[in-house]
Each structure stands twice: as C-alpha cells, then as structure tokens.
Image 1: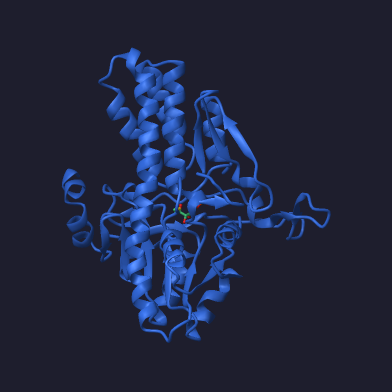
Image 2 (image 1 turned 90 degrees about the vertical axis):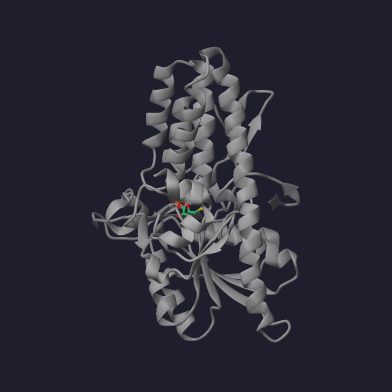
Length: 366
Ligand code: MRU
C-alpha cells in the first residue's frame, strides 16, 4: 500500500546488498524507519522485538531468515538450527511454523549447493503468495460490505469495527481484515471504521495510520467502547484478523477479540474473521485448550509509548512503582461466536465442515 504516494510492502529484498529490508514497526505510527536484517540473530530479534509483527508477516520474515541461514551454511544442521531459532521467537501465530516447515520440506531433498538459491526463491514466493491471498480475501470480504451498503440509504457509511492491526503492515501487503476495507473504499462505498486501540501495545494506532494514509474514514476508540457502540446500533459488522485458527474454526487473535465477539453476539452484529489459509492449524481442534498463548512482558501494561510533547518518542509509566502487570497477548474466540471466515477461497462457516469444504486437500492431510 502507499505511504505519502509511494508504494511499499512491509518487507522487500535488496538484491544489491543481498539483505532483507523491513519497516521497523516499533516506531510507527510516528516515524518511518527502514532497517536491513543481516544475520540469523537479526531475524530472530526482529520478530521477538516486534520490529515485524502480525502473523503473515512473521511467517514471511522467517522464510527470509531461513534463506539467510542457507546462504551462510546450507547443511542439514544449519537448516534445523535456523528452523528452531526462528520458530521459538513467538509461540502463538502458526504462520511461523507453517513457513519454516514449508521451507524445510522443500529444501531438505536438494543438494547443499542448490539450497541458498532455492530458499531465497521460496521466501520470495511465500511473500508474493501472501499478497495474492490477501488481495483475494479483500475481494470476498468486499461482497459482505456491498451487501450491507445495499441495505442502507444512499451515502450512509457502512460501519465496521476492527481490533488490533490486521493491516498491510501485519502482512506483506493489503492486510487481511483491512483488505476488504481498502477495496470497498476504492470502489466508492462509504465506510467508517471503529479502530480499537488494542492495549497494551496499541496496534490500533497502526491501523489508524494505515487507514488514514489510504483516506478511509475511521475513529480510534478505547478497547472497552465496542460493546457500547454495538448496543446503540453503531456497528454493522466486525472484521478481525487471526494468528491461528483451528480445524473447527476457533479463532485465536489479539487479546480482547473474544470480548468483541461476545458483545457482537449479544447485539446481533455479524462477527467475521479474515483468515489466510497459512493461518489454519489443521492439527488443532480446540483452540481454548490447545493453542499456546504468548505471555509478554508486564512492562507493556505498566508503561506506554507515544510521541512526547517535544516530538520525540517517549515511554511513560502509567501505574504506581512496583505494580505487577499481567500480559496474555492473545485470546481464543470459540467458533460458535464467529459468523464466518473470509478466506482466499471464499467465505465459510466457522465449522470443521466449512473449512474442509474450502480446503479439502489440507483437511485430508492430517
Ligand atoms: O502481537 P501482534 O501485533 O503480532 O498481533 C497481531 C494480531 O493479532 C493480528 O490481528 C493477526 O496477526 C492477524 S494479522 C493479518
């Protein structure tokens, strides 16, 4: 998508210097800082420190990390080490494991001399496929937005609510939850997006920055406002992303998503999840019991980062000294609360049958 008129992806290969370049998201939405990622340790740090974040983007980054490892040392041992180092970085989003296992399966049978080139080509393919998957999710999600728009008086906006940042910077391009929004806006459908702030790291500010750059009308709201807005008929549809969705359609996403789904159910608001197929964990049935939830530093709850009065990035403490913080980073929305899953192959119910009908070859494999 565009920043100040220039098209960007969230990562790209700099062939001249043979390095991956990323947008360091720790400084957004205030500063656009681009950073090269050179070593396996750099790749691991970039994911751990959330310079890159969002399930599809960390999967693509890990694939480039594997390419780095293969360029340095194409042995089986190096491949296994890279897989383990990168897979350990964040526990919840399944795209990491998906990308790394795909790389290992493709590279293992190859002679060592061919692995560096093949792994780089595979990383490019994974990045390009992500863009296309998200574009198609946008096309399918757009049909839902069109249906809502058709029921409204002309000119009245379709009011969407989203949580966290499932935008283009959380993927390689387009985003998942935001892709239908961008496509609807580009088609001229009036939209208004309620953007949850998404404490503790305020990924909603990233979504606000994205939507603002694209000209999509939006309002940044506190995490607790969604239920109130739904009760008052101010939300037509919720669309979120996901970090891992189980074979029966339980959706793991940023902490707070479950509460939005509960409020949506209580108020008859459709709750959709934009789901790229690499985010489906076909090995897991019950998301609540089986998906590992990342527990992040308490400091993210007791401190908050933003732009200080002088213009620089500042961190302030919001709690009394010594206050203990608890920080589960994701939660699971049971499939019964999900109206539908918007995938690159179409929209399906959040059920084992729904997913298996769209992805029969993947459902069969397990
Ligand atoms: O902790 P983050 O910022 O990586 O969490 C991101 C999310 O929860 C997104 O909603 C999810 O990864 C989907 S991104 C298309």
